[in-house]
Amino acid sequence: MASNFSVSSGFEAENPHNGGRQHGSGGVSYLGIAISDPASPFFIHPSENWGQCLVSQPLTENNFSSWERSMILVIDGKNKLGFLNGKILQPPDDSPLLEPWNRNNKLLLSWIQRSVNPTIAESILYVTTAIGTWNELREQFSQGDSFRIADLQESIFLLKQGTLSVSQYYSKQRALLDQLANFRSIPDCECGVACHCILASLRKDHMNDKVIRFLRNLNDSFNAPRSTIMLLDPLPPINKVFAMMVQHERENNLLPKPNSGSQSITNPTADSMAFFTRVAGTNLGVQGAGQGFKKQGKKSVCTFCGYTGHTEDICYKKNGYPLVINPRRRIHQDRPTTLLLSMEKPPLGMVQ
Image (cartoon, rainbow, N blue to C red; front, top):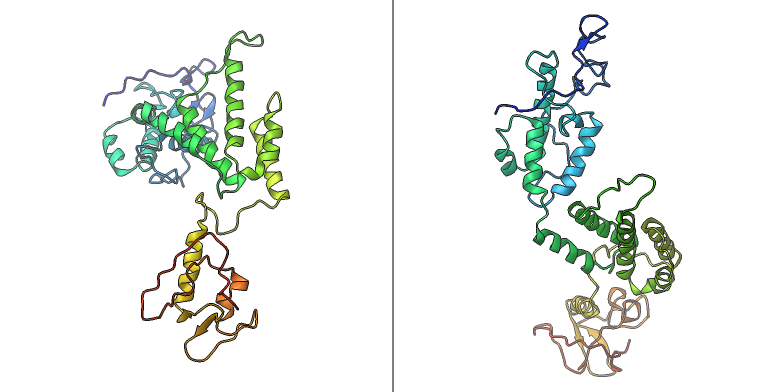
C-alpha cells in the first residue's frame, strides 16, 4: 500500500550552521535529539520485545474503548505515540530518518497485531503503516451505535449495590459511565477565561448526574447519609461522596461477608433447604412431636447443647432452626426426602 503521508515539520534534516545534515552523538537527529538518544521517539531499545501483547485483554468487537485507553497508556509510555496520532509522519525517501521511521512503524504494527484477537488481526494484516492500522480500527469499532449506547445506559440504571461493597459498586458503575462518556463526550470549552457558552453548565450537570446515580442505587443502610447529601446545593464531587460512603460503611460495619462478593441476594429458603438436605443425609428421621431427632442405632450426644440424637454440626441451637412444616410426617432413609419450607416459626415438636 503506497503511503500518502506528508513530511512532518518536526523532521530537522538541514542545519544552517554546518551546511548539511544535523549530526549529534548518534548522527541523525529529530527535533535536535539524536535518534540514538533514549529520549528520542525513534530510539528502540535492544531488549524491546517485538512479539509482545501490550494489553491484558486483546481487542474484540465489544471492548474497543478500554482497549484503546490501555494501548495509548503503554505506547505513550514507550514514547511512540507520535507515530499513531500523526505528529511523526513518514519522511521523504531521501531523508536519513526514513530507515529509523520504518523500524518504528514495523515495531508498532507488530504490537498492534499481537494486541487484537486473531480474526481482527487477519483483517489488518496487509495495512502497511501503524497510523493507518490504528485509524482503521478506530473507524471499525469506536463508532457508538444506538444499541451499544442503549445497553450501557440500561446497565448503569440497573446496577445496584446488593452484596457488593461500596468500593466494588463504585468501580463497576464508573467503568460503565466511562464507556458511555467515550461515546457521548462533552467537548472542551474554547472561550478562554471569559466563558460565554453552556459547556461549563453541561459539565456540571454531568458530574451531578454521576453523584445522583451513585447514591440512588446504594443499599437502604445508607439512607441517612444519602438523604443528607442529596439536600446539599451544590452537590459535592463524586470522589468526596464516595469517600463519605466508604467511611459510613466502615464505621457501621456494613462491609459484606467474605463469601458474598457477588450482587445476588441470598435466598433464605434455599439456605434452609441446603442445610436440611445435609441433615437428612446423616440417616436421621423426623419422629413424632415431642420425640425429637434420633439416629438409627447408637445415640449420639451433641457437644454444644447436651441433647442426644444429633451432633454439633447439625445442632439447631447452634446453626439455626430449619423452616419445616408438617413435622409429624415420618421420613425414612429408604424413601425420597421431601421437605416443605415456610417462613413461619419452627414447630413445637422439634425438641433438643
